[in-house]
Length: 157
Ligand SMILES: NC(=O)c1ccc[n+]([C@@H]2O[C@H](COP(=O)([O-])OP(=O)(O)OC[C@H]3O[C@@H](n4cnc5c(N)ncnc54)[C@H](OP(=O)(O)O)[C@@H]3O)[C@@H](O)[C@H]2O)c1
Image (tube, rainbow, N blue to C red; front, top):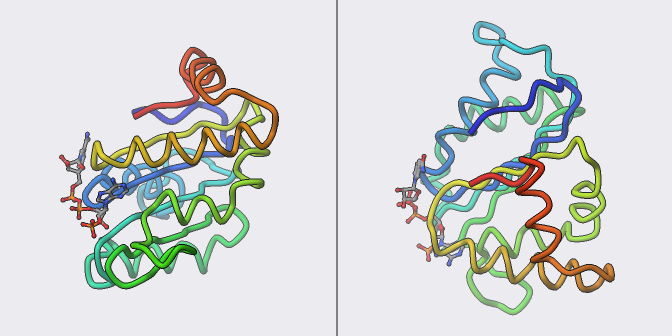
């Protein structure tokens, strides 16, 4: 997984559990003073799925980044065993993403948006289901859209 060269890109990161690892590296490169390698001025948007509040890896760092870099970093957590989705079921990462479906769809249209996914294999189905519904609502076919994004190197996992 490599970040694009564009310092103004939109970077959407979708992680479950220890799948946060590559995104920690991305974020530290973008924002941590001592490690800043690129002069990032785009938007980094992290969706993070964990079982409990105590298992939010790097929680203080992520919260600090979100506080310090409000304009450039968004951070949304799904805590499966402590939060419920709209149907009263476990709050999984795809349910949290669904709360921003319209905004996400709009952002994905931009050629400067790059999406990365890392973590449990099982989350792919849920995310694909959510994206299929969102694309449909917008008159598109997710499988085709996803294929094109992959071809363009904008959908990586
Ligand atoms: N490729 C890489 O570079 C890389 C790097 C790091 C980690 N990984 C992989 O990432 C995985 C992370 O495992 P982990 O033990 O850290 O995770 P975990 O803590 O077991 O799970 C993280 C969260 O995902 C939820 N989840 C379970 N099934 C899901 C589904 N179908 N859809 C959406 N969310 C779901 C879990 O909910 P519940 O448990 O409450 O159901 C939990 O809240 C491992 O398989 C690891 O090998 C890969």
